Amino acid sequence: MTAGLLALLLAVPVEAKKAGPEQRAFLEGVGFYKSARFEAALQSFTKALDLNPELKTASGFRAMTRWTQGDLKGAKADAQDAVKLKPVGAEQYVARGMARYVLRDLPGSKEDYEEAARLDPKFALAHYGVGSVLSSEGRAQDALEPLDKAVSLDPHAAVLHIVRGTVRDKLKQWRGAVEDYSRVIALNPHFPWARLYRARDLRELQEPSKAVEDFTEFLRQFPDHEEALYLRANCLFAMADYNAAIKDLNRVIDLNPRRGLAWSNRGLAKAQVGDKDGAVSDLRHAMELEPNKRQKMQDAIDAIESKIKAENRMPERVQGQAAEPFEPEPDELPLEPLPPPRPEDLRKPDIPKSVQPGGGRRAPLEKIKDPDATPFLQ
Image (cartoon, rainbow, N blue to C red; front, side, top):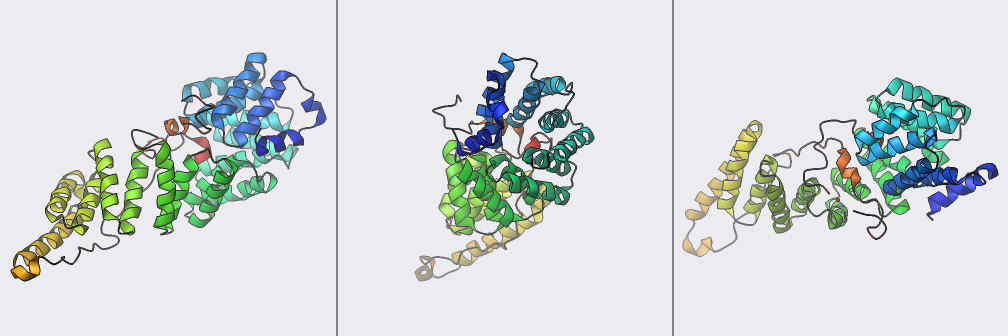
């Protein structure tokens, strides 16, 4: 039993502890959900519903859990059942708020969460729900207050830190987001996505060596995660580890041959290790894939070719010396923005493989077109 789950059960009134097996399974599921062990939460909510199919509070929580895991069809089926709830307490209002969120009834969801907070001001998940809705409505700054409140009420709930971290990301509060993801990792070391999220923020903070550590840890589980490979290559370039950057970009290009910036960045790295012909070839190919960046890439090619010509004019006794490395401007090839995570990526293991059935993605984590696909990552 996790510390978070133990704390949850200890906080439950005596009457609830004496409840039937379906209620105990439900409470266990809530504990797993709060600790970001979503697969385990799903199993507990399913057990509760197997024991009592009319337990619509469990349907609401399972709807949100399935939505988080990327099972949109199952999530909506549960949500349709849970919206039939006639809430009488804060927990039931939260359950219906989750169901309405899944069905994209954001005003109704917010209303339910706010009523739950009114009935029980110390119920962290009520404030968490309000913050999630506000963030989904594009009100990231407003979302911080209820999320701060939720975290203050339940600082051991990893899911609250995940949500607040993503909101801080939206606000470009990178340091605060790093603190939240670090807390998630401390609370649940088996939730690998916190490593990826923290690595991206460390990169924004220009701490490439720390970012590489997190990217590497994440890639141990998902070795073909395109975005992690691409961003680790960027950090390795910043650390002047050009050969390692080239290796990562080779794999990115294998996974997605049409990713133009991977070709251009590999070209710049090749220029740094003296492979100028390879650099020019990569940059020319990148120009075809990224015509909007054509001029910047042409400028890079011109700089490399001018060095080649200069080297060819050098006396024989000088040609053997190392040429001055090509140094692109820091913003010469701006990095791609990072859209929100896609739901299927959160279908991956969040607890050890030894206790959970079977992954990374074969296409990038951040290429989803639906920004609302993962509710707690808004």
